Length: 265
Picture 1 (tube, helix red, strand yellow):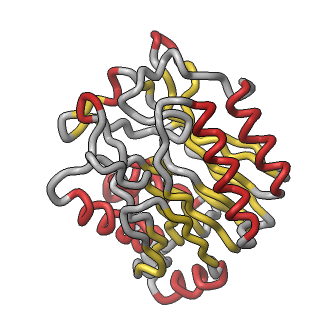
Picture 2 (cartoon, rainbow, N blue to C red):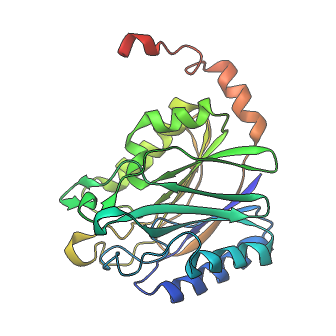
C-alpha cells in the first residue's frame, strides 16, 4: 500500500489550512498514494483558541476534507477539533475517502512538559481502525505514542499499520524521544508505524508553549527499523508499505503471541 505523509505547518485559520490540505492531497495523489495522512491540529494549530473553531464531523470543514478525498480518489486522514461537553473540544482524527468514513478522538491527553491539553480537550475512550483496500490501519495521535497498549490493540484488531498524526512539542531531547517512541511502538506491536508531524515552524513553540511541531516525520517497519525519514522543513513523504512483511516479522518475533496479560491484571 502506498501512503503519503504530509509534513506541513498549519496556522490558526481553518479555511487556509483546508486549502493546504487540498494542495498536498493532490500532490500525494499524483505520486500514486492511496492514503494521505496529515498532522494533528491540521484544522488549526495549537496556541489558537480551539472551542470557537470546533465543528462537528458533519460540519463544513470536515465536508471540505471529504470533497478533497472524493476528488482525488484517496483516503485522507487529518487532525481537527470537534465540540465536546463542558466547553471543551475533542482532538479528532477524521479518516474519509472512497469506502472509508471514520474518526478517532485522542485517548491520551498531553498533560506533560508544562502543557495541559486536558484543560481544553476531552479525552476519547475508543480505539479506531479503518480498512483500505482490504488493509487494516489503526489511528493514533501524538502523545498516544507513549502508551504501547494502544498500538497492541490495533494489532489485536487486525491492523498491519498505525497512522500516527502529531504536533510534537519542541524541547531538549524531544526529537530523540520522538524517533525512539515511534520505532518502539512499531517493534512491540510488530506493525508499520507511519508518523507525521507538523513541520518545524521555526520558533518551536506557539503562545503558551503550545506544541507546534518539530518535523522529522518517519516510517518505521514492523521490525522497528526506520525506512523513511524527513527533516524539519515542509515536505511530502511517499512510502510503500509491504503488508506481507508484517506476517513474516510476527513469525520471527512472536511478541504478540508470547504475551501473558494475565500476569499483569
